[in-house]
Image 1 (spheres, rainbow, N blue to C red):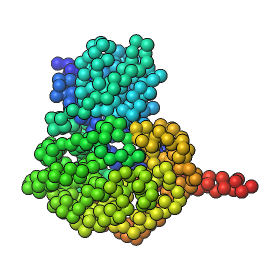
Image 2: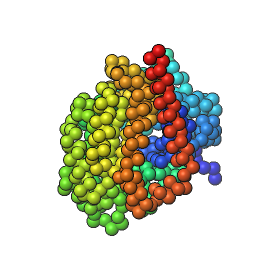
Image 3: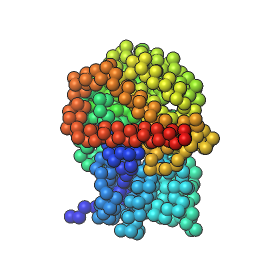
Length: 499
């Protein structure tokens, strides 16, 4: 009996997660997350009687032609792409190849980039038939069940082409979806889950592990955040739903560690406390990480998290400069509250991870050095310092020309390249500051000992490092070579300026 063909094939493009001068994909070397967005869409469609398949190019890298060939063999009525700004160009190339093989297959784009630029994402790119802006479940289902332009014109959240071929956006869909009524993401549609998927090195004690999102939206107004998908509201799964989700992952896939990827996991304190009660009373223990806003941290909450299995808390500290923090991290965050939150987390016996951004508008050499000093004097176990990327859905995107130099190269807008340079700095100077900070930070004895201690705290991370030593070494040499080139270029430019 012939297998029934899918109604839609979802594609998660790999994108070019690179930095200038490097060939190896930096993010895949240490972390591969499941594509939770299209997994949620797939589960929702299946619940409503539509079959789907997922091609995850991030976990299973393949050439664009291979993706088009696989979709061509499946011959679905729809092909859906989830795209970020940095993966948009690759996705359009794949879509064009699919259209050549399957002219009648409708191509649908969704994700953060389309949500931020609904009509512009389709303008001039004829291979994209439809766009889905914002939450995709109800919009995509309505699109797949529609049969005429008249029907499509009334679907909120949809971008479609009118008779002239120009894109038309129907406006945002009201956020009425009951998150507890959604099925769990379709993990079973990922090839070799969870074996192909890896949490960040030294960010978990034992595997297998995976990522979970338990809320949508954010009420805060940080200038650098793209809120185009879920808006500024905050909706969340109940503690009971999250607990059943965790139990499902443990029972079905043997998951032993969960990384809650919510920006504001601790925003609803009562929800978190209820979840800690459920996890603490549960027999099969798991460990988990979560993120928190510094103003949400208190000793009782952290103690309860620790008892329930929390292993590490990531704090959005962003910068060690009070002026930059006040301008960009709008809300209750202050330098003093950040330091207090770190002390509370460490006093409870948890690992503390600091999340920072380098190169925000207003950044100077002095503000960057204040951030370096903040990291040096505080008890931080791990850091993630990204290079500021101006995303189209962020408030900052509108006035960047007044704040510095912005090179709008979508494929390079991936948080590993300085596509924006604040006024008063050069790209070479930013690279030099970033390079020198990393060299000094990772050569500190306390940091080196911290990673040595992972031999018994996170032995699987060291095992992964050993198994993939060649790949990690390649990345390290490419980083050093690129940094050296940046330094030589800066010296050359300075010499020319002096002549």
